[in-house]
Image (cartoon, rainbow, N blue to C red; front, side):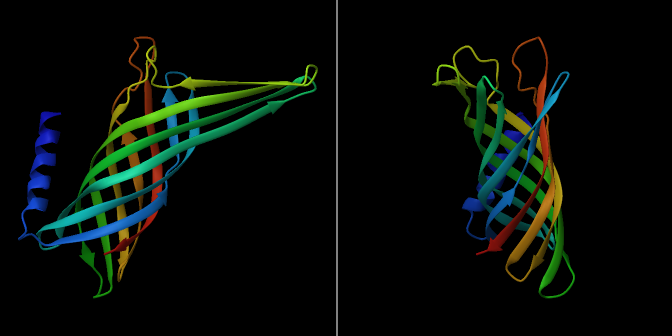
Length: 206
Protein backbone atom coordinates (compact mmCIF):
# COMPACT_ATOMS: atom_id res chain seq x y z
CA UNK A 1 0.00 0.00 0.00
CA UNK A 2 2.86 2.40 0.77
CA UNK A 3 4.32 1.76 -2.69
CA UNK A 4 0.93 2.55 -4.25
CA UNK A 5 0.72 5.87 -2.40
CA UNK A 6 4.26 6.66 -3.53
CA UNK A 7 3.26 6.06 -7.15
CA UNK A 8 0.21 8.30 -6.74
CA UNK A 9 2.40 11.06 -5.28
CA UNK A 10 4.91 10.71 -8.13
CA UNK A 11 2.23 10.96 -10.79
CA UNK A 12 0.66 13.96 -9.05
CA UNK A 13 4.05 15.68 -8.96
CA UNK A 14 4.47 15.11 -12.69
CA UNK A 15 1.05 16.66 -13.34
CA UNK A 16 1.93 19.73 -11.29
CA UNK A 17 5.16 20.22 -13.21
CA UNK A 18 4.41 22.35 -16.21
CA UNK A 19 7.12 20.99 -18.46
CA UNK A 20 5.60 17.56 -19.09
CA UNK A 21 3.69 16.64 -22.23
CA UNK A 22 0.18 15.52 -21.34
CA UNK A 23 -3.08 14.62 -23.01
CA UNK A 24 -6.50 15.02 -21.40
CA UNK A 25 -9.51 12.81 -22.07
CA UNK A 26 -13.14 12.66 -20.95
CA UNK A 27 -14.99 9.37 -21.30
CA UNK A 28 -18.13 7.35 -20.57
CA UNK A 29 -18.71 3.63 -20.60
CA UNK A 30 -20.45 0.43 -19.57
CA UNK A 31 -19.01 -1.64 -16.71
CA UNK A 32 -21.05 -4.57 -15.34
CA UNK A 33 -19.72 -6.00 -12.10
CA UNK A 34 -19.85 -9.42 -10.44
CA UNK A 35 -20.01 -9.63 -6.65
CA UNK A 36 -18.41 -13.00 -5.88
CA UNK A 37 -19.25 -14.32 -2.41
CA UNK A 38 -17.80 -17.45 -0.81
CA UNK A 39 -20.42 -19.78 -2.31
CA UNK A 40 -22.36 -17.62 -4.78
CA UNK A 41 -22.21 -14.60 -7.05
CA UNK A 42 -24.47 -11.71 -8.08
CA UNK A 43 -24.27 -9.76 -11.33
CA UNK A 44 -24.87 -6.00 -11.45
CA UNK A 45 -25.23 -3.61 -14.36
CA UNK A 46 -22.81 -0.69 -14.30
CA UNK A 47 -22.04 2.63 -15.97
CA UNK A 48 -19.21 5.13 -15.51
CA UNK A 49 -17.93 8.54 -16.58
CA UNK A 50 -14.60 10.17 -15.90
CA UNK A 51 -11.59 12.27 -16.78
CA UNK A 52 -7.94 11.27 -17.22
CA UNK A 53 -4.62 12.87 -18.04
CA UNK A 54 -1.90 10.88 -19.79
CA UNK A 55 1.69 11.99 -19.12
CA UNK A 56 4.29 10.97 -21.71
CA UNK A 57 7.34 9.53 -19.95
CA UNK A 58 9.22 8.43 -23.06
CA UNK A 59 8.46 7.82 -26.72
CA UNK A 60 5.25 5.82 -26.73
CA UNK A 61 5.27 5.18 -22.96
CA UNK A 62 2.91 7.06 -20.66
CA UNK A 63 1.09 7.04 -17.33
CA UNK A 64 -2.61 7.91 -17.31
CA UNK A 65 -4.28 8.97 -14.07
CA UNK A 66 -7.61 10.52 -13.28
CA UNK A 67 -10.92 9.94 -11.56
CA UNK A 68 -14.21 8.42 -12.55
CA UNK A 69 -17.71 8.13 -11.11
CA UNK A 70 -19.24 4.65 -11.33
CA UNK A 71 -22.67 3.23 -10.54
CA UNK A 72 -23.72 -0.40 -10.02
CA UNK A 73 -27.40 -1.35 -10.09
CA UNK A 74 -29.63 -4.41 -9.96
CA UNK A 75 -33.45 -4.57 -9.86
CA UNK A 76 -35.54 -7.68 -9.26
CA UNK A 77 -39.25 -8.42 -8.89
CA UNK A 78 -41.11 -11.50 -7.65
CA UNK A 79 -44.90 -11.70 -7.70
CA UNK A 80 -47.73 -14.18 -7.15
CA UNK A 81 -51.42 -14.12 -6.19
CA UNK A 82 -50.59 -12.92 -2.68
CA UNK A 83 -48.53 -9.91 -3.74
CA UNK A 84 -45.14 -8.80 -5.00
CA UNK A 85 -41.66 -7.98 -3.77
CA UNK A 86 -39.46 -5.52 -5.66
CA UNK A 87 -35.82 -4.88 -4.78
CA UNK A 88 -33.68 -2.02 -6.08
CA UNK A 89 -29.92 -2.19 -5.44
CA UNK A 90 -27.70 0.82 -6.10
CA UNK A 91 -24.03 1.48 -5.37
CA UNK A 92 -22.11 4.66 -6.15
CA UNK A 93 -18.31 4.67 -6.33
CA UNK A 94 -15.39 6.98 -7.07
CA UNK A 95 -12.41 5.30 -8.79
CA UNK A 96 -8.84 6.53 -9.25
CA UNK A 97 -7.04 4.50 -11.94
CA UNK A 98 -3.28 4.84 -12.54
CA UNK A 99 -2.44 3.04 -15.77
CA UNK A 100 0.90 2.48 -17.46
CA UNK A 101 0.40 2.46 -21.23
CA UNK A 102 2.34 2.02 -24.45
CA UNK A 103 1.08 3.63 -27.66
CA UNK A 104 1.68 1.77 -30.92
CA UNK A 105 1.14 4.20 -33.80
CA UNK A 106 -0.31 2.64 -36.94
CA UNK A 107 -0.34 5.97 -38.80
CA UNK A 108 -0.86 9.65 -37.96
CA UNK A 109 -4.54 9.15 -37.12
CA UNK A 110 -4.65 5.63 -35.67
CA UNK A 111 -2.92 4.11 -32.63
CA UNK A 112 -3.39 1.03 -30.43
CA UNK A 113 -2.50 1.41 -26.74
CA UNK A 114 -2.36 -1.49 -24.25
CA UNK A 115 -2.56 -0.46 -20.59
CA UNK A 116 -2.18 -2.01 -17.13
CA UNK A 117 -2.13 -0.77 -13.56
CA UNK A 118 -3.94 -0.40 -10.23
CA UNK A 119 -7.24 1.34 -9.52
CA UNK A 120 -8.21 2.56 -6.04
CA UNK A 121 -11.97 2.60 -5.44
CA UNK A 122 -14.15 4.17 -2.73
CA UNK A 123 -17.81 3.28 -2.33
CA UNK A 124 -19.59 6.56 -1.56
CA UNK A 125 -22.91 4.87 -0.85
CA UNK A 126 -24.86 1.67 -1.39
CA UNK A 127 -28.33 0.54 -0.47
CA UNK A 128 -31.07 -2.00 -1.12
CA UNK A 129 -34.67 -0.80 -1.21
CA UNK A 130 -37.35 -3.47 -0.78
CA UNK A 131 -40.95 -2.69 -1.73
CA UNK A 132 -43.50 -5.27 -0.57
CA UNK A 133 -47.13 -5.18 -1.72
CA UNK A 134 -49.85 -7.41 -0.21
CA UNK A 135 -52.82 -7.92 -2.50
CA UNK A 136 -55.19 -9.13 0.22
CA UNK A 137 -54.82 -6.01 2.38
CA UNK A 138 -53.84 -3.76 -0.54
CA UNK A 139 -50.90 -2.39 1.46
CA UNK A 140 -47.38 -1.44 0.42
CA UNK A 141 -44.33 -1.40 2.69
CA UNK A 142 -40.91 0.04 1.88
CA UNK A 143 -37.65 -0.74 3.66
CA UNK A 144 -34.13 0.51 2.86
CA UNK A 145 -30.94 -1.26 3.91
CA UNK A 146 -27.74 0.80 4.05
CA UNK A 147 -24.82 -1.33 2.85
CA UNK A 148 -22.38 0.74 4.91
CA UNK A 149 -24.39 1.41 8.05
CA UNK A 150 -23.11 1.18 11.60
CA UNK A 151 -23.61 -2.60 11.83
CA UNK A 152 -22.44 -3.38 8.30
CA UNK A 153 -19.62 -5.79 7.44
CA UNK A 154 -19.07 -4.18 4.02
CA UNK A 155 -15.75 -2.45 3.32
CA UNK A 156 -15.94 0.81 1.35
CA UNK A 157 -12.36 0.60 0.00
CA UNK A 158 -11.26 -1.65 -2.84
CA UNK A 159 -8.13 -2.09 -4.92
CA UNK A 160 -8.38 -3.42 -8.47
CA UNK A 161 -5.85 -4.70 -10.96
CA UNK A 162 -6.82 -3.29 -14.38
CA UNK A 163 -5.67 -4.23 -17.88
CA UNK A 164 -6.93 -3.64 -21.39
CA UNK A 165 -6.32 -1.68 -24.57
CA UNK A 166 -7.62 1.34 -26.44
CA UNK A 167 -7.88 2.19 -30.11
CA UNK A 168 -7.46 5.89 -30.90
CA UNK A 169 -8.66 7.42 -34.13
CA UNK A 170 -7.96 11.16 -34.26
CA UNK A 171 -9.50 12.49 -31.02
CA UNK A 172 -11.75 9.51 -30.31
CA UNK A 173 -10.70 6.60 -28.08
CA UNK A 174 -12.53 3.28 -27.97
CA UNK A 175 -11.26 1.20 -25.05
CA UNK A 176 -12.04 -1.96 -23.13
CA UNK A 177 -10.57 -4.29 -20.57
CA UNK A 178 -11.02 -6.12 -17.30
CA UNK A 179 -10.78 -5.09 -13.65
CA UNK A 180 -10.13 -7.65 -10.90
CA UNK A 181 -10.84 -6.79 -7.28
CA UNK A 182 -7.94 -7.66 -4.98
CA UNK A 183 -9.53 -6.70 -1.66
CA UNK A 184 -11.91 -8.79 0.47
CA UNK A 185 -14.89 -6.47 0.96
CA UNK A 186 -16.40 -8.62 3.73
CA UNK A 187 -14.94 -7.45 7.05
CA UNK A 188 -16.32 -10.47 8.94
CA UNK A 189 -14.57 -13.82 9.36
CA UNK A 190 -17.54 -15.74 7.96
CA UNK A 191 -16.75 -15.42 4.27
CA UNK A 192 -15.24 -13.41 1.46
CA UNK A 193 -16.55 -10.92 -1.08
CA UNK A 194 -14.62 -9.76 -4.14
CA UNK A 195 -15.73 -7.84 -7.22
CA UNK A 196 -14.64 -7.95 -10.85
CA UNK A 197 -15.90 -7.18 -14.32
CA UNK A 198 -15.33 -6.23 -17.93
CA UNK A 199 -15.62 -2.64 -19.15
CA UNK A 200 -15.91 -0.83 -22.45
CA UNK A 201 -15.97 2.89 -23.08
CA UNK A 202 -15.62 5.77 -25.49
CA UNK A 203 -13.41 8.77 -24.81
CA UNK A 204 -12.69 12.12 -26.45
CA UNK A 205 -9.28 13.80 -26.25
CA UNK A 206 -9.28 17.48 -25.30
